[in-house]
Length: 374
Image 1 (cartoon, rainbow, N blue to C red):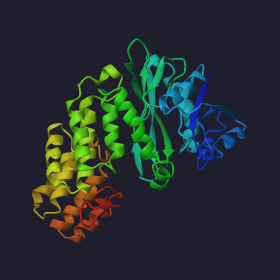
Image 2: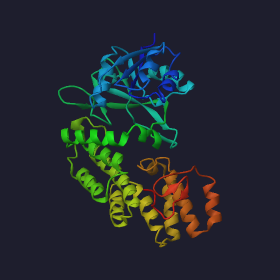
Image 3: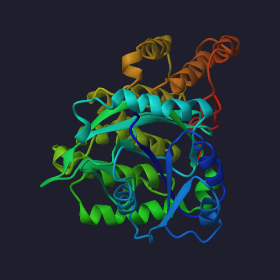
Image 4: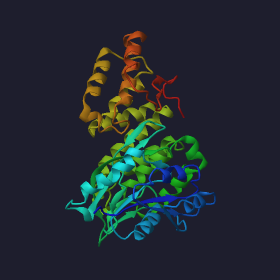
C-alpha cells in the first residue's frame, strides 16, 4: 500500500494561477491542502469550490516558515509536498510523483531527509535544483526564517537536513516581472529579510538573499557592504542548520554583485570581485572579466580560447552562479567571435546556442552599450 501523499499549497491573492495549480494535481489520489493566509481576491473561493481540496485559513504573520509549519501540523502521516500556487505539474510529472516517493520510502534517513524537485522557470527557461520541498510529515523537520525559509531538523539545536533528488519537475512562472511587480514581492522580501538579519545576524543566508533580491535597487556602497559582511561572518553555518556554507553563499554573492556592478559601470570593483571569484574556484570571474573587457577592445585570441576551454569544462561550468547550463558562456563566445573573427563566424556559433539574457545580453544579443540594463 502506498504511503499517503499530501500536497500543500500556500496561497494569498493567487486567483491568477491557483486554479491551474490545483487542476494539475487532481485525479492522482493525492490529498490537497490549501492554506490561505489572508486572500482578499477570489483565491479562497476557487479553492473552496474545488471538490478535492481541503481549505484551511492561517492569518499571515510576516513569516513564510510559520505558515509552512502550520501546514505541516495539519498533515499527520505520509509525505508532505509543498507546491507554490504559481507552480504546476505536467500530467506526466503528476503521475510520476507517487512512484518517485515510493522509491524513497525505505531510505534509512527518512527522519532528516528532504527531497528537492526541479523548479523550472518557464519565463526565463532556467531550471533550479536543490530547493527543499518534500519530506515526511511525521518527522521533526520544520522551517526557519520569515522568507527564503529553509528546513531543519528541530531538536535542542537546529540540525542540517540531508537532501535527495526527487526527480520530478515543478513548472513555475511567478518571477515574471509583471507578476512580481503586481504582488510587490521585492518590497515584501526586503522587509522580511531586514527582520531576519536583525533576529539572526550571523546567518549568512539573510545577507546573501538581501543582495540577490535587492540588486535592482541597491547602490554600489550597499552592494559592497553586503559582500563584506558575508566575507567576515563566522564560517560555521551548520550551527544554524543552514544548508549552504558561508563560503558558498559568499561566492554566490560575489557573482550576483558583479551583475549589479556591471549595470552601475563600476568596473574597478567588478575586476576586484573577479579576482576573488578566481581565488574561490568559481568560473564566474572569467565571464565577468571578459565581458568587462569587451567594452575596451583589449582582447586577443587567447581570451577566446580561454572562454572556449572554460565552456568545455562541464564540472566547472556546473558550479556557476550565473547559469550552470553555460548559456552565458555561449553568449560570451559569440561576442568574442564577433570582435575577433567577424560576424559570420559569430552567427554560425550563435545558431547552435540557446538564447541568454542578463545584464550584458538580451536573448543572446549583446546589449549596447555593454552593461546597460538597469
